[in-house]
Amino acid sequence: MAKKKNFPLRIDPKLYDILESWAKDEFRSVNSHLEFLLRESIKKAGRLPKNEPKKTEE
Image (cartoon, rainbow, N blue to C red; front, top):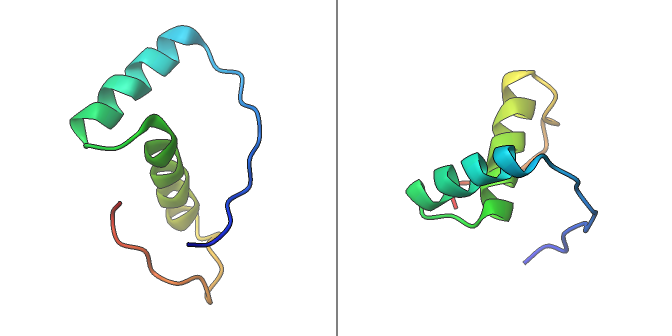
């Protein structure tokens, strides 16, 4: 598995609760769901590098 970058994230507790519930519905951890959402947003914005390997849903 590729090494992942760790960083602290401060987030509104209500937003976290929403993310936690959504992640649970998708059978993901909050962390992996946030990564999934960020990757999808980056892809949608056309900012994902062309040589980025395609990843299936986690």
